[in-house]
Image (cartoon, rainbow, N blue to C red; front, side):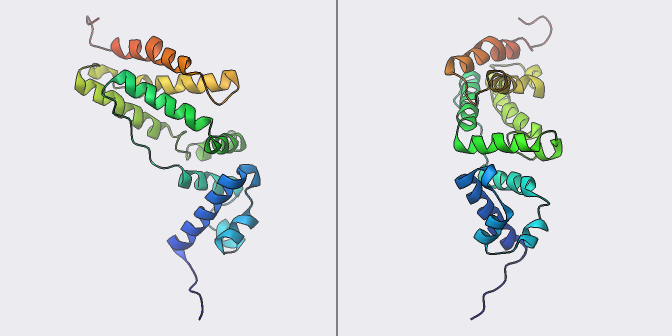
Length: 197
């Protein structure tokens, strides 16, 4: 009985699953084309036809691992913003977050590759925060003028800055609360029409 050769989407899925497993078990440093090919039951040429190098494959595998996350809906803008920051904080300090940090370091200034990472995609990040802010507008907690991508994402940008300046992949919960209470909520509340305070 001969085994049917996988092609197209089935082969790509097998390669991504194998690469994702390698990332999970060995991190980006341990990801090799040889090991992925062996685990996927294919050859390196099949991988290189789809991904030009280890970094591109690592990013694709990470995306395969990162599931689509739904925005929180706690009933308040404060609760939603804190939950989004807490999720980011937990993720960055998790084993999968370590893989993400390794991929970002390896990608360096290759912005086209970096933008493919779910957490680094400006559009994806803004969409999540704009959804949360849009719900706040619908509840009357914020003015429609606050629905601007830079306003919506300022909290997560400040958290990223915290990671960079402190040199550790997590921040104390009081820092998250301070970002929301001292910067994010006041900014959102002051984005109303002129004369509104």
